Each structure stands twice: as structure tokens, then as C-alpha cells.
Image 1 (cartoon, rainbow, N blue to C red):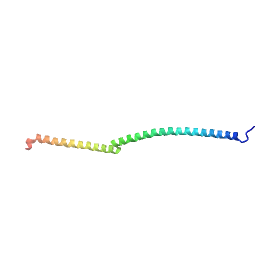
Image 2: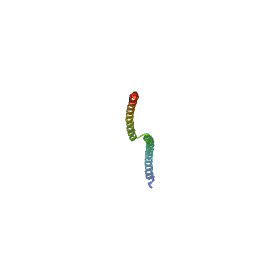
Image 3: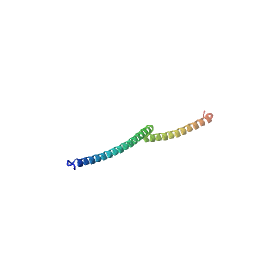
Image 4: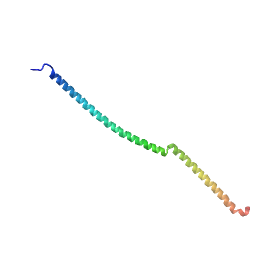
Length: 107
């Protein structure tokens, strides 16, 4: 005798819905797992970026391009001063040698 209350049909429908919901749940779990993996990768990249920022900060504390340019200009100025000082010293030494050589004639 067939069941006229529709329970068999309804139970099949409920089972199909449960299977569909289970498939959706599994798909969501897979997607969440993928997102977690991506977040882990991003975290590693973020740590790498932070390390690079810290390194750059340390390098910038040592010297900057502007400081290097100023240092180069200072070194060039010092080289010029050294050249002038050596030339003046040589001239003074030559004059002193001349004075010593001709001291008897002058005095």
C-alpha cells in the first residue's frame, strides 16, 4: 500500500537539500583553507617588507645621498686647501732658505 501522506517524497527532497548543503559547506571549508594559506603567505611577505624597511632605515641613519654629496664637496674643499697650504709653505721655505743663504749680504 503506497504511502499517501507524501513522506517518502518529502524525505527524498530533504535528503537532497542536506546533500546540497553539505557540498556547499565543503566548498566553503575549501575556500576558507585557501584564504588562510593566502593570509599566511601575505604575513610572510609583510615580515619581509618590515625587515627591508628596517634595513633601509639603518642604512639611511649611516648616510643619505644628500650627506654623501656634502661629504664629497667637503673633501674637494679640503684637497684644494691642502694644495694651497703646501704651495704657501713651499714659498715660505724658499724665502727662508734665501734669507739664510744671503744673511751675510743683507745684514
